[in-house]
Image 1: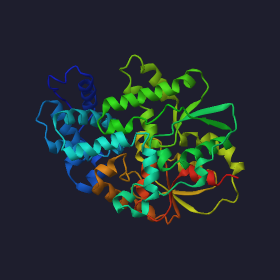
Image 2 (image 1 turned 90 degrees about the vertical axis):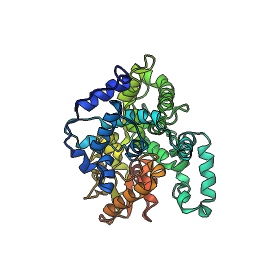
Image 3 (image 1 turned 180 degrees about the vertical axis):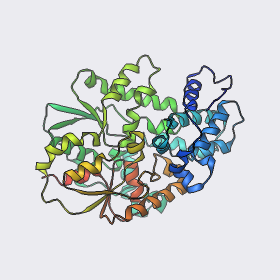
Image 4 (image 1 turned 90 degrees about the horizontal axis):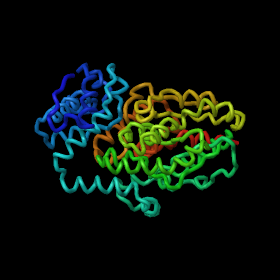
Length: 411
């Protein structure tokens, strides 16, 4: 796709990056077949190809409208289109640029700006934990829309952290909302790794990976979060004490794996960020090494419970990791299946999307749950806290992180 950038974008980092991405697009439209919002709405402008045309027009100097902004807002940034694209168009990077440009030119309504500000400041605030505890105390009294966002209190095992020292050590990002909403995911991860002879370390100064601010178009705030994490992790990374930085939330994983790209233009952080990205592993990437060590430590025979696995978009499309979780859990003796239909489609969570675009998010959730129901499972498992919480709002079946199921089976 040829483009003629407007003068204000020529020679700028965003302009150059967007032009390079646009050149790879061949207009084929394969992406529309796997775009969740196009599947729901049937509007070309609510699919990747249409949004690419909108962004191209903006970068070429065409007038920018509120309608343009809304079509970009409705994108989940699930990156399914990247998996489908035969030309390797990096749509996720392009839409981040497009949103920055459009938001700089189109004023959002005051109420919309307020919600977006509350999300990026509230979810990353130290006060989020106490607020979540209060919400859990009064959960039965909350209106349905708020109750959906407040999970039930965590089990007592959430506070059980292993204390053994091991020669093999990894760093783990606790996350910004996960410790308050579902702390058992982090402690279960530490216990599973401990059973395999790996010690889990945490850098106290690390926090939000940067995804929340970045996807809410606070680019500078997102980079600040990234730099803080690099600084927090660097003493142990540079000293060679750890072998990996482990992510048990695939949304955080895809972001940290791209720190090297995000901070490539920062001379103080470029090399460190690249090293951080090289060391980052989704927890599922450790499974091939964990299986032989964990198998003798599982209660046998395992519970015959059928598990339905929902692979998050950030895992299968963002990180391009597909098939590993169910394959290795089945090798351990679990009974895990993926939906036969639309396993590639987003569940509608997509970070803050379920708050900002609830109508579309709930349609996608119900569509996902309908396909998972065909498995006739007793438990749904996933690999990202956003997916887990969002799916749980639409089903009475328990929805858990797969590492919690594995942890509960350890002797």
